[in-house]
Image 1 (cartoon, rainbow, N blue to C red):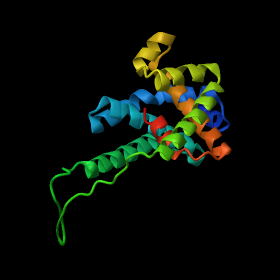
Image 2 (cartoon, rainbow, N blue to C red):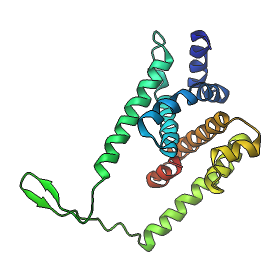
Image 3 (spheres, rainbow, N blue to C red):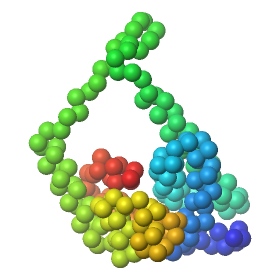
Image 4 (cartoon, rainbow, N blue to C red):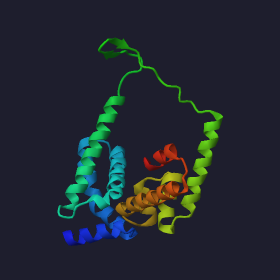
Length: 202
């Protein structure tokens, strides 16, 4: 694919062209997966990081300078995001029954009580209804993949076979469906941070 074609797709994607989004994802998804997998060594985490990379990149498309290669810009975002994920993962890896060494001595880890209350459960269910409503309003090609992935919990490979479309297309449509829903939630003013976080990482 020529640089001229890629620059044209970027412009189309900025203007909201759905097919341009999908073509860019199909074009770069395999390479991003290969690079991130070499760093993470875990297929599921790699798939999530690839999706998150596209989300970050497409949110910042207008900042892309076409004097440089789009692939270089995109891979830099993927690399930095993967490094951040590795650092966060390392910070979370410790034993809860062993003291943590600090400057002034040893400190026992304290686990926060994050148990859900009836009120939180009610709010969560209400927010979930809002998202399901927005899913029902999606165009057919996006609604089908997002329902299969998030409500029926099929893998990308299974969805690809069921719909007879490439895995890259499945991932591109899921990505775009998430973006549409997030935009509508933002416009609606719904406070759904926790729910949309879970929604994105599956």
